[in-house]
Length: 127
View (cartoon, rainbow, N blue to C red):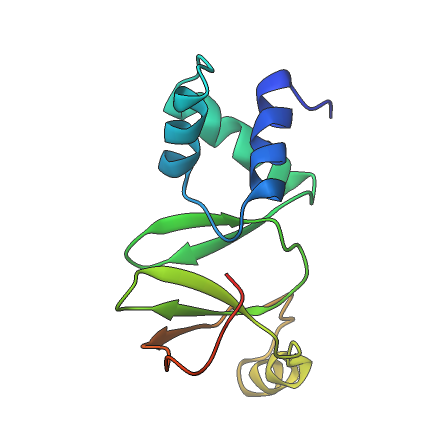
């Protein structure tokens, strides 16, 4: 599958970002850069980039999907005070997949965990 001109702009924007972005945030930035694009086109390109394995997508119960340049399996922390997402430098716990397989049967492909709370001022997390 070929990446469109808009898809490349969206990919580049995510790579330059300091954290996670919603489709609406991406649209706003592109419009500020005088890129003529609609929200449906942004979503279409984000879905293509995700399908190609070029970006990650995280589902949040309140925010819908957010998009992440970090493609590796990892966990997130959502700061409920600042409304920011952060990647956690914690190894992916494959034993959780095996535990769920043992309890429920079947095959787990992956899992996603989002911790929510307030970050202590003395600790710094990556966005």
